[in-house]
Amino acid sequence: MTTTEVPTVATATDVIANLRALVPDLKAGAAENEKARRLSEDTVDALRRAGAFRIAAPAKFGGLETDLRTMLDVSAIIAEGDAGASWVTTLSNVNNWAANLYSDQAQAEIYANGPDAVIAGVVTPGGTARKVEGGYRLTGTWPYASASLHSEWFTGGIIINDEDGDMLDQGMALLPRSDYRVDDTWYVAGMRASGSNTVVAEDVFVPEHRMLSMIPAFSGANVAERTDSAFARSAFGPMLVMVLVGPQLGMGRAAVELVRTKASQKALAYTVFDRQADSVAFQMMLAEAALKVDTAHLHAYRAAEDVMRWAGAGEYPDLLSRARVRGDAAVALKSINEALNILVDATGAGAFADVNALQRIWRDSNVGARHAVMLPRVSIETYGKALLGFELHDHITPII
Image (tube, rainbow, N blue to C red):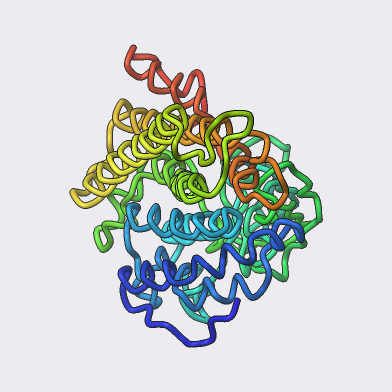
C-alpha cells in the first residue's frame, strides 16, 4: 500500500469513497497476500485508515453504526480488489455488530482504544465453560477463525456446563488478545489471504460481563431490548447469513470486469476470431454471467432492505421471513458461482494461469460460498421447510 494520507471517515459515504480509491492498491497486493496466507499489515492499516473496520461499531464509541446494506457495499468494494481482505473485514464487522449484544462494560473494553477494533469470532461452540466466582473458566479450540491474525478481541461459541458436566446454556465468550493464541492451520485451496486459522484458549477466566447467552440472541431478544439503535435491533440469523454475501458480490463484479476488459486484447484460440469480443458465443456468455451477477445483487439487496426495515420498525421477522432471507442468500451465492463458471469457460484454460486473477477469484468465491453458516442447499432446504410449515429447530441450525 502506498496511500499515506489520512482520509475522512465521518460518514458511510466517506468510507465508500475511500475504499473505491483503495481498490487499485488492494489489487496490487492481492497475490502477495494469498502467497503469505494472510493480509499484510499495510493492507490492514490501509483498510483501517479508510474506515472499513468502524462501519458496524457502536456510535456511542465513535463508530458509524451504519446498516446491512452498507456492510454489503463495503465488503463488495474491497472484494473487487482482494477477496481475502474483504473476508477479514466482513467477519470483523459482523462481530462488531454482535458486540452490541454484550454488556455496556464489555463494549467499553472493546472500544477503549477507538472504534476500529478488529474482532474475530466463531459462533459454533468450540469450547466449554463452568461457572466460578465472578465469571467462568473456559477452554476451547475454534478453527476457521477469520480475522484472527489481526484481531484484538475474539468471540467464541461455548457450552456452559454445570459441576456434573451437564449443559446449562450455549454462550459466546468475549476474550482479549492476551487470553488466546492463534495456531497456523489455514492451508486451503481458496480464500488463503483471509488467514482463517485456529484460535485456542486454555483455562482462561472470563468475567461475567463478557459472557453472552445465545438463546435470547437466537430468538430475537435484542429487537425488544435495543430501543436506542435500529442497527442493533437487526435480526441475528439474517445478519450472520447475509453479511457473507457481500464479498461474493464484489468478486462477481471483479470477474465480469476482468473478462470484459481483456476481450478486445485476446484472440479466441483455434478460431478465426482475433478478438474474443467479436465472437457471438463469447458475447452471450459474458452477458449471461453479468446478468447472473445482477441477479445476486437484486436478491442480496432485497434481503438487506427487509432486514433494515424490520429493524427500523422494531419487529422481529417471523420464521418464514427469516427463512426467505436465507433463500435470497442461496440464490445470490449460486448466481455468483454460476457466473464465474461461465466466465472461466469463456476465457478457456488461460483463466487458470497463475498470472490471471480470474483463477484466484474463482477459488476464493468457491471456498467462501461453502461457509457452514450459509451453504446454499441448506438454506434452500430451510426455506422449503418453512414454506411447508415444518418446525425448523427440529431439523436444522438455529441460525435463522
